[in-house]
Image 1 (tube, rainbow, N blue to C red):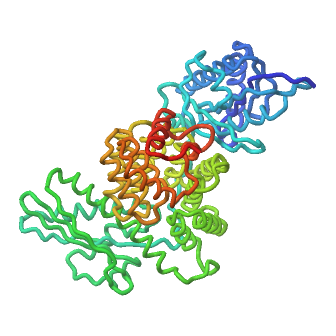
Image 2 (tube, rainbow, N blue to C red):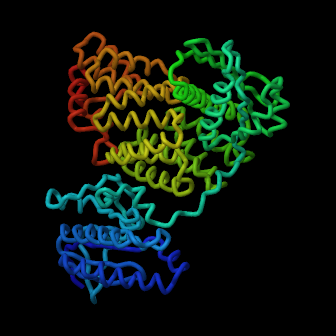
Length: 596
């Protein structure tokens, strides 16, 4: 047995068993053709050799990382071109993983962690794409044009240490387009009921003095029903059912009973020449009591933009309101008597308390909910989010492991329900904190696309944009989060990130105002106090800085310049640029924060 350094390439066919079920002879013929005409000749041409074929997979070894990667890219380009004339459900698509490491060779076979890592990377690769380890990315350097996306640290099966992963698609091919080459999965069924709250939106009454405005109030009701229906945890009565009550006197209890819902949302629209007023109120369907009410006054501009804006604002506000109402009904009940949905709600309440003990309680509750219902995607997503928060507030040494755990759980949630916004929120935020900023931004944009009323997704997108050095874009998303959810349980974080964004743009007065607003918010932690110290250090305001440092030390008595720098790291890679961190630490020092 001999040991040597090698680049290991592992390639495998996506969905081979399904293809065999469709056409055994045709699939085997296609596999043989790919191997003999594309895979093996390309490996040989790039100075590699095939170690073995395992079913539909190929394991190859190269002495050069550049050769291995060139080979993999050429294979994927060739197969992509070959598939153009094949019907989508019969296309044979490959995933490839590459790693460089010491291997053990014996009897024409190779062994070792490096081989296992290459296989795990192959499993993580997108259909038609390539995944490589950080070691491969480092060795490539500028020797090869390889526009890969950082996809964060991953815990790989039977591998002790996390491995940083980079993903590549052929230029001009987006991830979604590559996945479309694979056969479409069976249509997903709607999320199971799980005792989710239900609501009916009654046709908003037209109170306008101007004739012919019935279409606006009906159109607004339609928009609100559609927007609320994007909330995956909320059951919304169909439009035809709600509109059967149009023009009738409102009796919330009777309507709730007839439609089988728990809550009723009703309102009115009043329009003048240039202004419009929309009122909305949420009623308890059990006893008809008023739970929430709001009025929205706007200047009339584009009618469709206006409908969309107010519908999303109502939805963004109702989401946390209903969550609080639903949880209040659970007080005093033992977890043993609760359903998975009810345990999940209890977990959310503890999640938003932002202390280490509360976060660990939330973690236990989400795990219990998943134990009862393993297919509960939202619980998986929120468990991922808890690990992110535990990374923030727990041991610095545990952060890298927490983020790896969050990424794995979020991807599991997406596999259960790819349209769950909370899953893309958790994955996007974890990737951004892990330094895979662009990949994180992509998932956060997708979360917003799935539910444009999801205030926390807008906030997280704004945060990631600030991490990427684009605070002007980040501010717009954070302000959208404020608009959608003015009483959100994350409110202190909205203010805090707004302070950081203004600090980045050197708008120090606005930054200080936002930091102070964050410190006045419920459940606040040490972060806005730390940001305020840096702002005052930048402004040269030594008198206020003394008080700000004292306030910071009430949160964190051990906070120093050295400790502050570590807060930006969730592993070996910082969430924000080193230039930003250096400036921040310098300003903390100017304010008087001690070095150690």
